[in-house]
Image (cartoon, rainbow over all chains, first blue to last red):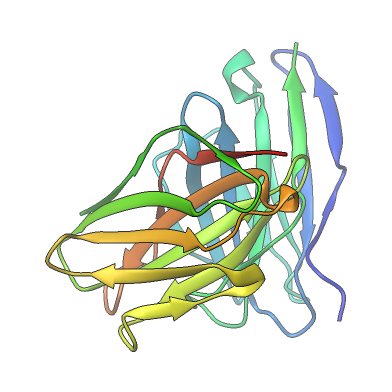
Length: 113
Length: 115
């Protein structure tokens, strides 16, 4: 069974631009969570989607948004990029909402110049 | 509310030596606890988890952890380190039941293995 895939793996943007990251969960998994990983703040939870609905949201500004499609694939969008948004963005999938066993993708490395 | 503290941002051991990575947690409800490993340029891989069953949990790659409620600890151990164990290790906590599932991660411990 294929694992969680994230595209693109690397991305370079400039301040003020917006970016969309994509995540395809493991087949049969219906929940997708997003995390931001930085050296300064560590791993922080962004949001969780299940059945196309956002179930939980971390403490991030409204510039960070996401959505989930009927096939469970998910996208996250960051608008008006700031230098501090440079990070590794990780997606994790699980079978159901609130499932404590998550499977992580390799991440998208976003660099904001 | 919940939090995780990993003692030591870097731990250095010799190949064949005991590995001990420390994790202390706080949680207002009975917790579930996890250890993940992250290799360079990769995502997190689950090593093991505690979900209120046996307090001694065995995971992959020879790792194990013991849940000690009285000490609020969930330290990760491996009897004999291999060079391939060099990686970043994260401890995480979630509410065991009820409430919103939002995991809290520790800051990570980098394991360095010397030949």
